[in-house]
Length: 124
Image 1 (cartoon, helix red, strand yellow):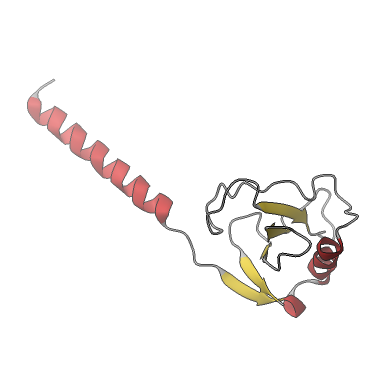
Image 2 (cartoon, rainbow, N blue to C red; image 1 turned 45 degrees about the horizontal axis):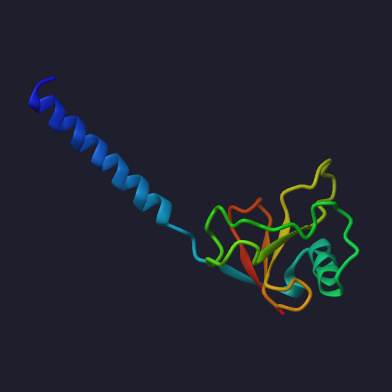
């Protein structure tokens, strides 16, 4: 390889790595939604969370990893996810409520209707 080719290749690689790093750190700001504005199924799920269940889906209450990095950074195990029923869906659908801390009492809840791409903090 000649030096010019190698220098150009390194420059392209460095630019690519820099743009990936910048893109990965861009996180959309969290919006918010009043609890009364949630779909009725989400309000029902929120009520179940606060009373500690029982939950209709086996995966309700599992740890949510926040791998997308959209929610505030916390230790693993801090967030838990709960399914919000989607009428007409043949599976769990895309809607979830994520709780922070102790699900039944924390008061920290987030709603997503697009399978973790965006979240809105639930205002009660």
